Length: 168
Image (tube, rainbow, N blue to C red):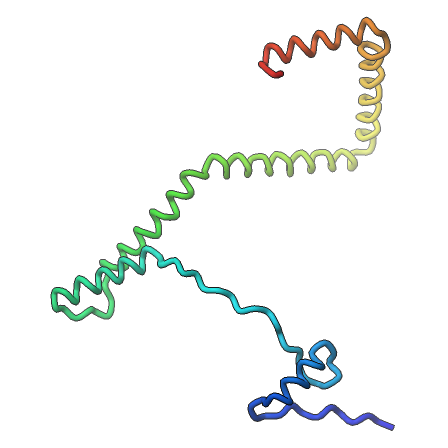
């Protein structure tokens, strides 16, 4: 036995019964209708941009002088562009050092990761660097951590560096 296809959606305006049935089957596609989106509508900003204020002032000035507003006003477009550029460039000038520092840090991080990953592609280099690290670990442990007198010397050295740098 073949199943019959679901009935086509009504072509007229939806009434309350249609809306109720649509909301009942919005989670499943059993009724053959697309689900209803319940997302809230976006709010519009109440802030009036500076360019709109300039445009309104220009219209008011033209109306006060008794002139009809032209279809295209090059001076007004230039004023709007200058205002927008001043707004954007002011923010950029304040944040430029931060943007450059963050960009440089990301670039250094990316390059250092790429260099570290490239060590694995050289056959013996990865193992050689592991041996160098292991050797330095053994040297540091023997020199600074193994005996009480060397630990005291390490504490004094760290404290003198902190004093020179002004760290608590």
